[in-house]
Length: 255
Image (cartoon, rainbow, N blue to C red; front, side, top):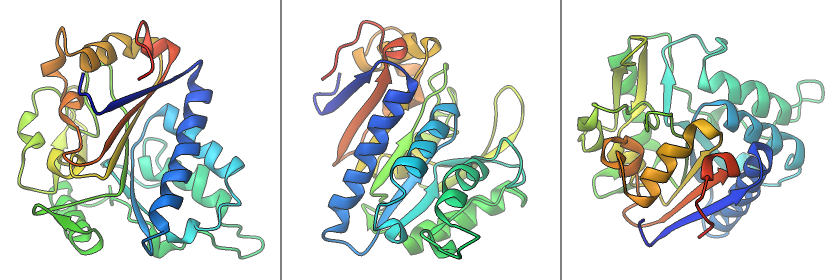
């Protein structure tokens, strides 16, 4: 295990998501003491939905929502209102909850939300989103550098939309790329490894028994760990924190 890796374990998916929500708000507040805004990267999945719900319900009173900018690690090429849309889930659960249409109160302005447009041609969208990252984020070592990146993993060890066998995306000189899901053939747009690894802080949120083997092999560097793209996503100069529930952690201990 990388000596800089931190592992935090809670009993179930909700408690794990709640810990991430608390840490997320605290990290944002810390960054905002010296910066006008913080650039955050979000991902999709079921457990992040719980995380967004907790942010909306327990941290609606956070005073600096309007200073947080939101980007996405990847997106399926679907309509924003499609149930599979990563952006759509965040909008429904978090943004619409914080922005009160009845009172007109806007905590997160549209200018802070940078969705990946899943309705346009994927390669074109990847290029346009790369331009957005270049404009909106600080550039370190020739790549955009998000402040906080939230990621998950699949049972196969993929993260964002970097799947096993797509290893060229880990070291691509592009910021974003259009990819096909290896099984469904669905097109997606994803940030590449060099952008994700360039984050000031990477937080993996992983829950469920089905992830136990993959998590163990990645963190203990045994078994098939080198086949898992998520293994390679480590910040070159920043924090790496894994948030696990007991089912995903298995025999792993907090570090």
